[in-house]
Amino acid sequence: MAERAAGARLRIREIRTADDPAFRRAYRLLHRVFPRAELMPLSAWMHVMDERNAGVWTDLNWHLFVAEYGGATVGAATGAYLGNVNVGLIGYVAVTAAARSHGIGPRVRWALRLAFQRDARRLVGRPLEAIMGEVRPDNPWLRRLVRAGAIALDLSYYQPSLRRRGKDVSLVLYYQPLRGPQGSIAAATVRRLLYTIWRRAYRVPTPLSRPAFRRMLRALEGRERIGRRPLDPHPGASAGEKEDR
Image 1 (cartoon, helix red, strand yellow):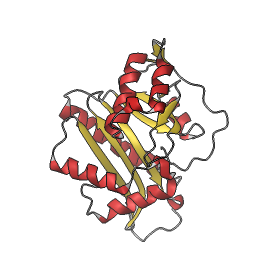
Image 2: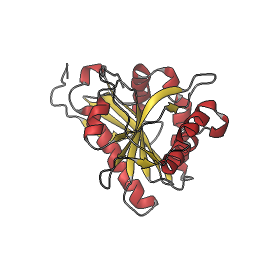
Image 3: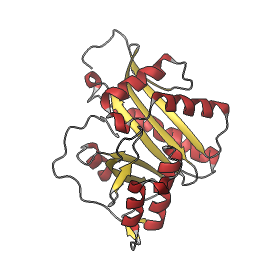
């Protein structure tokens, strides 16, 4: 990192209350990295944290991890465990510009993965099936994920806009199986995954009423399996996973 505090060590921890000062620092970091249409409002984060701490969830859990160095928040990662499909969904991973290229992004992402694995054991009593996430088509991190066994799904995927009157965001949806390599996924499984992401992770009350969601379902019609999409031949220097490294 550009400036190293004397004797400082990188610390990765989970934020458990909205009163933790790092809660808002993490949100500010993500706000600098991601377009407004892709980022959940701070109030939504606070509602989710309150619900989790109230113990009202059944097979759902949400996590926020931060990486801290010398008292500063240099990285953040969020994600949700979705028990009905037994997958962990990466929400956002971001690292400050000064702290990039030090492996902080993969480390906070790994902390999320371990949390998802604990959720799966505790909530549904079996190993985590997969990790999913959304990235921009030119994100160079997508190639690393694919080399590690992830499937960049051959599907026109949209993240629902998280702002009123905003446009839904075109991204690449990937599926990273954890119980052996796969070359494709059943279309019926993808349909359930899409609905779970929109309805439970993004809290869209009626996904079927949204044109972008109906377009995704129409793209699945007549297909038995969804395989790998071609990758962008000219990846850029993305700022964020939606993922950031």
